[in-house]
View 1 (cartoon, one colour):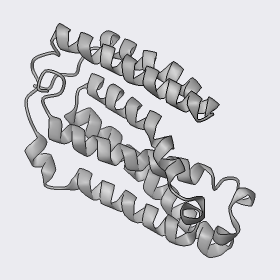
View 2 (cartoon, helix red, strand yellow; view 1 turned 90 degrees about the vertical axis):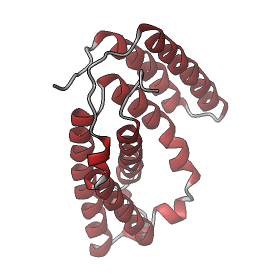
View 3 (tube, helix red, strand yellow; view 1 turned 120 degrees about the vertical axis):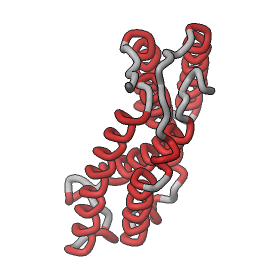
View 4 (cartoon, helix red, strand yellow; view 1 turned 90 degrees about the horizontal axis):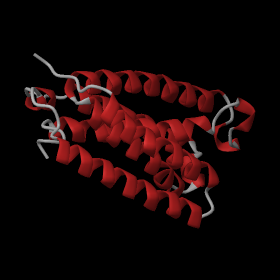
Length: 191
């Protein structure tokens, strides 16, 4: 694992926080325009919850990007972030619509985002600081590329089997991008 990402605790923190970002994004995108909001979120209180969650999402996204830039290899961010973005729609669809489209659901979503921010700002950051002077070895990068493509193929056929056309196309575009980015973009090393 150290050849792929020597900072595995930071990678786990990034994965949890970015998953919260993606889940929040997919929830909030259904709340705009305001006329498309469910009846349970209509009104001033519902609009305030949506705007509060939107503000938390922007702050969390900025925090995740800064955390990833400071603590992780670019290749790890692209691969793990891409896989999370591909599979979060399945998690989103598993949450009952009546629950996620309610005021209590938006309140819980806000708490999830605050918890993710707390993870990024926690004392665990001190534990995750490490030196990254060695680039990822060629055999590990090759194996990781193959694994990403195999997982993407499985995700593509799974999305196709459940009749999801949009996520299927996203997988088809994003997976090759992740592999190409891992090989083309240089790894960031800290001194």
